[in-house]
Image (cartoon, rainbow, N blue to C red):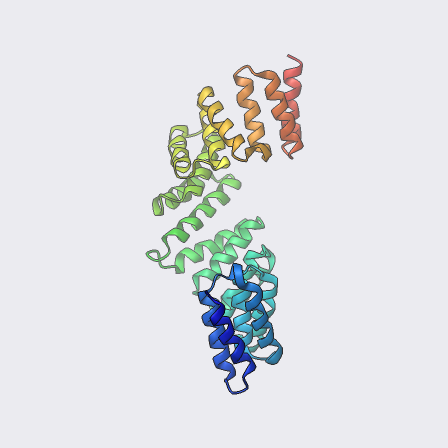
Length: 316
């Protein structure tokens, strides 16, 4: 289907009469109209050809950056993006692409450094504050994260960015939960859900945090049910619903859902195994409970807390 197009591009690259900008334009059209997963090696050959012939061309590096981002080769894309920024430091799109690539690479400290630089030049661009806040949140720099996330909310268009705004509000809810400011945690999670009632990660996380605090368990159950209705095979969502029912002393329901969580990937998660053990114990299945707790320790669970439960059972 695409062979004629490749043959045409081959001829243009062999021709001395076709302008370089036209070749680049053809490659962009190719990039936008073929399944790269099937033809990325052939496209890459053309792009390397362009870079080899014109190593200082902005067009070549822009094309290369777009191509490597699309095939998820972010470190290679980074080289061309940095070249573009060195030539046009005031181009916000290049800076934005750099931040996106660093986020894919989970290079949170560099995101913080780069976005701190950009705040002075592009201080009203919401995405700068979003990425700065998110990176600080991931590195547990909570004060800095809250400051930037609030700035994101200040500068963003709430009509155009409802989903992202909901995500940001949920980050703030989690930060305040982690710092035990539960009043603010409840406030921001409530705002996140109000902004987007289909933010199922927020619904699940808030439900789980409420269960950890043993408060508003009926509300937590409603939020959790909403999450698993949307994604019935998500082991984390299933675990949350099981745990809330455990806290409500609905041990049979908890058992039903912890099994579902276990069978959908939770068998490799220490927290799920720990919860599984607690539920089994309360159903009188002591030997099975101990096995699940021991597996939870193997998977990196809280050894002191879980070992104490095992010891208590063995000395009963």
